[in-house]
Structures are given as C-alpha cells and as structure tokens.
Length: 509
Image (cartoon, rainbow, N blue to C red; front, side):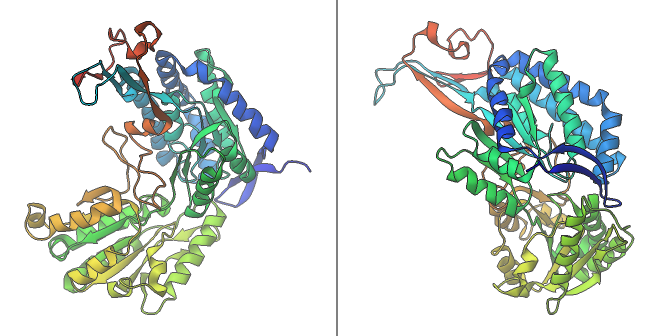
C-alpha cells in the first residue's frame, strides 16, 4: 500500500496548498530514530552544543521571511504574531545555550569520604547525564515555539539528547523548512543531520513513542491524544518518561471587592485574554468565577461590549472549527445557561467569539453541567456567577489540574485585607502558575517560569518553558570510590571547567 500523502492546507480556505511529504512507515521511523541515536556522541561536548543552539537561532532569524510566510499560510495566525513567536523561539535557543555554558544544570555534588559519619560516607560524586533520543510531538497552536525548534527540542538538545520530531499536520511545510534550518546549523559544527529527525503521520507518532531507542517524550496537544501516547509510553517493556501538556481550564476568580473597584477594566482584560489568538492559547481563561449582584453585572456588561467588538477569526484547521461550533452549541443548550454574546460560526471559514453565563451552584455538584468544566478550544469562556463564598469554594473543589489559576483582588485585598491569602491558598493546589491581578495568556521564557501543573494539565511535575525544562531529559548518576583519573572531568576535585557545584556540603559558584 502506498504511503499516505501529507498535504499543506490553507485554513482560510480549507484548500490544499501542496503535498509536502508522505507519512512515515514503521521502517522509516526506525531509520530516523537510529540515526538520532548514532548522533548522541556529537552532542557530548557542551561547547559544541551551545554553539549549535546559537547558530540555529541565527539561521532561523536569517530565514525569517520565508518561515513566517509559510507559517501564516498554514496557520492563519498572522505575520505579526508569528514574527514575535519566531523571535521568542530564537531567544529560547540562546537561553538554553547560556544554560549549557554555565553548567549548573549538571547538578554536580561531591562528597569526600567521612569515616566519622553514621553510617560512614564513602567517596561519592554525582551529576546528571542525558537520557538519549527524545521524541517531540509538535503543537498546533505554536508552530515555532512548541514545534520543531521549540522548547522541547531546545531543552533536549541542551541536555545532550538528539530529537525526533513528529510534525503536526497543521503545519507540515513549515516543519520541513525548520528541520532543514536546524540541520544546516548542525552541519556548521560537524554534528550529523540525524541529530534532528522529522516524521509525519499518526501511526508514525505511535511507532515513535514505542521505539526501544527512544528514551523520553515531550508532547503538547489534546487530552485524548496525549493520554493515548502517555499510556503507550507506560506500557512499553521499558517504560519511559512522558512529559505531556494535555489540557487546561485556567480558572479565574474575581472577588466581589475587585469587581466593585474595577469591573469595567476586568471585563475588558478578560475579553482580550480569552480571544487572543482566536482563543487558541493553552492558557486561555476558560472558566471565570464572578460575583452575582451589581458589581458582577457591570463586569458582564463590560465583557459583553468588548467581546461584541471582536472580529471573527480563523482557527488552525477546519476540524478544530467544527469541534468548537459543536462544543459551544452543546454547552449553550444546557438549561439555565445564557449567552450574552453567542459564540459559534462566523463565515464559512471563521468563528465568532462569545461567552456563556451560569449560576455557580450548577457547577458545585456532579451532573450535566460538568461539561462546563471541560476545556473548549477557541474563543469562548464560561462565567459562573457565585452568590457567596460557599459556592465559590464548592466550584474550586471540583476543578481538575490546570496550567494557571488567577485571582483578581481589590487594592485592599492585595495589601493583605480580606480573603486574598485564603484564595491564593485554595488556587495553589490547582495550578503550576498562580497569578494575581493579571491574565494568564503570555508565558515568559525565564529561569523562574513554570509551565505545567497537576493532571490533566500535564502528565508530570516538570515545566516545558524556562530553564529548568532541561531537567526532563536527564538522569542522575553517582560514582562511588572511583579513582580521580577515571572520573568524568566534571566530577574531579580540580574543577577545571569552573562548574557550579556542591563540594562537601558547600555551594561553590
């Protein structure tokens, strides 16, 4: 049987642009993974791989015009948004290059023998080593930052792990172009092209996570798809770490005092956040707990005005458009659910933004309204109006894990008056990032960033954004009683590499 063709499709029209590739067979996946496996040694030198990451960033910037044009043709996200996302991607590559140069991520710890300890301590020297080939599953909504050259790839290469990327079907042409740029950058430093592999097709993605030479996987996508791959990774004869970002409701709590103080500003800010990128951000606020009463009414009116002024937009593909239209219709049909601005179909290829309102008490107990506690991908949010603190706590107690949780407080509450601290404590178990008086859309690439959260937000406790993302692709090894001459250079007493380390209990910088 001939391999299925892979087409690039224009989401603005639904028409095929060009055939980009064919779906990879099991044999082709095997060849690609083995080539990546053979490239491991080329990443052993930290100086080489940090230089590779910087060259990759330089060459992506040099190819910017063509990459952005192709990305826009396949995603309809617009040149301005995509240019910014490409800049973020290049910044991310350079940031990981700096982490590689610094070396703290190796987590070097040295203990010399101590016969007086109970029990006695032998000579112990610990650091972290790369796991091996990493499978990367691209996201649809970030064709640069969470795709072929995105955070999973950058952090895996920084750790010293080759990657095999499963291209997303929404931007296959861009995926091919970016992979070629990364391979050209690798060649500059004598690194084999196999260090960045690329495969297309659903079955190829399954073959990839099951391949015995794949040592870990990173995924960004749907709960259904991510859970299937997570289960496959766990069912292998030798299970592997699967770091999946699956789904998130990203709840927002608005206190009555905050609504009374600035209802109009909060409503406008919420509208901007929930419709940003046509509602296709993984941290889009999907559930808002707002007070009933006059202040809450002002907030809803402000949200209504702002969302009504939002133009219809194109989703990443027509399947997502169909799911969005069906999803909002099913939610709107629930009894006592209102639609101040009705979300749904725009023109033949677009969708219109909107939001639903419901009494919070409907969500506080298990039942038909549980649908409103599930993510709906696209420009829609649910505003649940609570009468008292009991209803608010009741809804929060039923929420699954999230990437983010936000609370809007009044100025007095932010200064420590009222329930501000209590609400923060209630939100902290629900999310990996907790915000006060802000909006979750926008994930800064910074050392302190955490982009993850309790399941189903992610399948692990790690982050996919920020410097500590590199830790996902490494494991600790300790050498006991090994003669100095046989130790890796990173673990020798002289510290000729000048690495940050903990030496006999002292932190050395």
